Amino acid sequence: MSQTMKAAITAVGGYVPETKLTNFDLEKMVDTNDEWIKSRTGIEERRILREPGKASSDMAVKAIAEILRTKNLDPLEIDCIICATVTPDMVFPATANIIGDKVGAKNAFGFDLGAACSGFLFALNTGAAFIETGKYKKIIVVGVDKMSSIIDYTDRATCIIFGDGAGAVLLEPNFEGMGLQDAILKSDGSGRDFLHIKAGGSLKPASVETVMAREHYAFQDGQPVFKFAVKGMADVSAELLERNNLTGDDIAWLVPHQANLRIIDATANRMGLPKEKVMINIQKFGNTTAATIPLCLWEWQTKLNKGDNLVLAAFGGGFTWGAAWIKWAI
Ligand code: UT7
Image 1: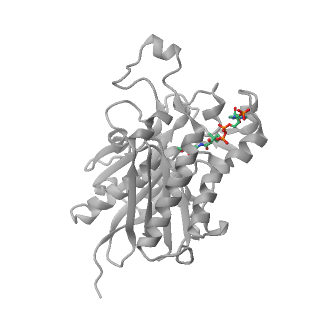
Image 2: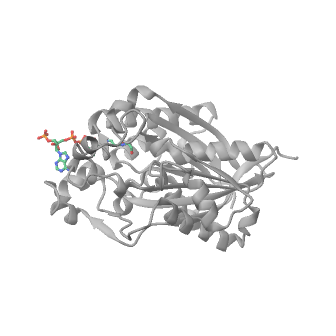
Image 3: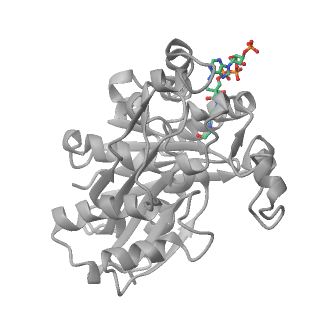
């Protein structure tokens, strides 16, 4: 029986910088300790892009280069690059354009998508919608963030959480029923007060005063974000299972945004999934914002089998959140 066309991930690439910032390093920088960070977040170390003159696009290019290599793909065949990020190289042009130039994707159009920690999930759905039109055959979706460029390393509430990295996927049409099956995406702008950067936008342009007040760094009121995240991510994942008549037994892997191990555990519990079915690399990479989900897929790809049911789930600044059900196609 012929299947309708779906958009499937056909290759994955990833990159994390070599430099590690451990909990013990942070103990020397702010009033914190390894025990507190591990027990409250699950994080032990994160990667930091230290090289001067390197930006988000450089990490994204490394992740995409892996896809080009493994698929033996000519960059001229790429139709579109969607870059999910909150740390663009510059305010404009879009980082996707810079990435396209650096990888030689001369026939591709590209744009950035800003949905913070849900960015990759939103971009994946956007890319899939392009594929489903039948007009586009090869779309790169990349989640990348150089969080170290917007983190205040004197603020213990945020500097212990975030790290740098990039993960990318190639989306192609699939006629065997594999790929993106369903997704629920949500936004609630009233959550903006709890997680944002105060200055540098059109509301409060950069000035000597904003720099002196450290308003160009990420601000987070952790507790309310935590409460919304636990409920948001778990609710939407459960709703996705329910409306597709799936139970935890049908799911091979949960691929959660890596913000806090306690949020991941709550989502897995709600879905009835044991820990062995949950991708977790937060201990090594921390919260890389738009890169967490594709970095998990990158690390786990050799363990995945064609037809596996995966649920991708995220919660982030905005607020933004959502979950997607995909059938693994590789
Ligand atoms: O990815 C985007 C979305 N973001 C998230 O999902 C993050 C959600 N939030 C969280 O993960 C957690 O709220 C944090 C990890 C940020 C904080 O954990 P918490 O359990 O909510 O801690 P808290 O802010 O309630 O602080 C508890 C205590 C406070 O001390 P007192 O008032 O009880 O004496 C803090 O001052 O821990 C103190 N504290 C710290 N102690 C050592 C706060 N940060 C630190 C720290 N080291 N880094």
